[in-house]
Image: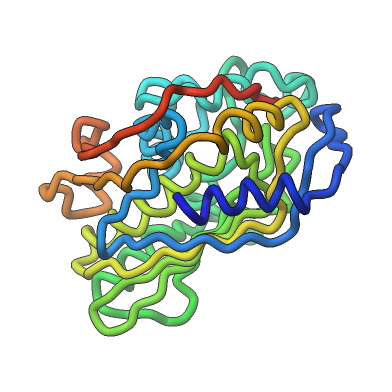
Length: 283
């Protein structure tokens, strides 16, 4: 919580106003923020100064792992987060590559599980990483990337958190995640939960102990219509201690994550929080 609240305070005190053409709003913006999560110690980075909906974040992560490209499928997993971008983004609605209601196009997990090769076929990045790590191999390129500029025009949104690099030291697995853009009041806790959970899951299915997860944000921002709630409400509250995440130990493989795993296989213990805050969402 301290690093999250420190970032929020730093944004308010040091951020610069930037016009955002996509949303038509101004943002207080900072360049470069680094966060760390103690996955080994199971210090789950769930925000306590407001209620945070961790289930939707994990459901979205499961959708990425499965390579889903339809917002209705994400909703069925337990998260409605892609409905707006798939169905309310005017540029995407007019895009000839859109295949109908709820289609997201070639974004996020689609790239991670089926990156197209110029000579035909595709690359399953995640499968390669799981196979290598399961065999105790770290080739210094255990990288899962969703960032494919050649296909930006074929999706409803460029990826914000775009690259995850796994590193194996002995029997301990580490993760470094890179994010180009972050809506701090709304998006950051989603992203924190996903970075933490991704390392925990990958360590579990590849047979390693989790270490620390490192989360680098390039452009951290607060939209102008969120600022008052952040400054005058959330930052006035005292945080509680971090909860813990419990993952079903029967999850043992990538195939398990692709098939039968649901939100019922995750549980958060000891989550104390203040009331929810209805931050505005910008499409």
